[in-house]
Image 1 (cartoon, rainbow, N blue to C red):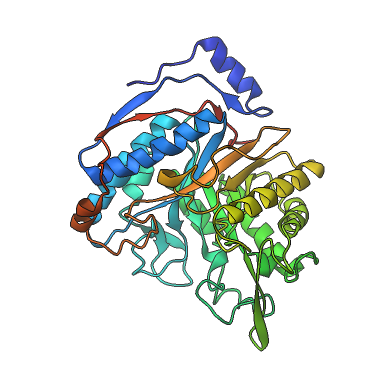
Image 2: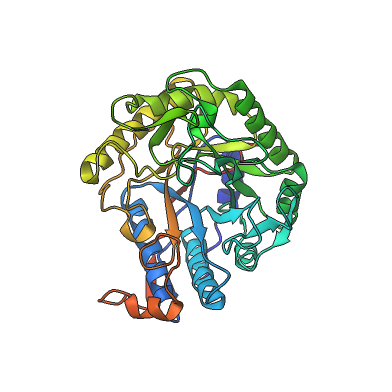
Length: 401
């Protein structure tokens, strides 16, 4: 179904008000038909997420979506194309996983360099889908830049606030030429990953001036290339204290040593340091999965921590869009299981709930099974090939310039 064009008066009103209030527009339900049940499963998940947003008068953001370009690449790209078509109908802003300083054998690199230490200038197979479903008048589209979160505790047992890694070897931020290359491919939005331990070595302590300077320089590069940024605190709710020659102690958000107010304290310090006009959104925490409790108790910890962080940012008059992930499971198919209702109260109404979409059966993004196995493993009852989609009624992630 074609999107009905708004009247000229509404277009003029949107242009005038877009810089100061969230965009809102009425849009009818739409139907999208897929060609197999793996595609249908992916689109049904997005339909679940968008319906939750509509029921809660909320808006959303897909911070990650990724699929492999090695085994069964054509089938997974077809799933991605169907999914993006659904996201177009819903009107969701999306950043694909991932671009930047990835090795040549990384199967999910949308854009990457020829070799380590060089500028990003190689187009991966996924780029054809990403570019076909680019930014429009209603939503922003782009990619993740994750190199600022490389070599952290997820993969490095010696990592910690006392052993944050060597800049340029273990982790990095992209070069000016890399940002310019992304802009030349039609990318408009980047989700830039940063790390808590590198930026604030001690919870409730001062920020690292050296690391802040690196992030600010990266933001300058993005702005010079004409790109907009979501600054993503790329962590999971734990904090690696020490590391290296010092014993590593993993603190968990909501537990001893890392109360929920620690996240609010981080952002109260970091937001003013990231005052670049390119930064249109702050991603409070990538995937809050490693908290001081599991299950519904973990979800409640996250609801408290995220609300405290929103309050802290509004208290310092930060008016940017705030991206709030859900406690696991946070993929579109499972969205709402741990959070039946929207929980953030924001006086500016500029919060978007963030979900991450991967198409394998467990939503992990590992893609261990073949596509044929995925077809066999779709749970019963199978999703219908045609799905009803609920378009967003509000949009907060937009340019402020």
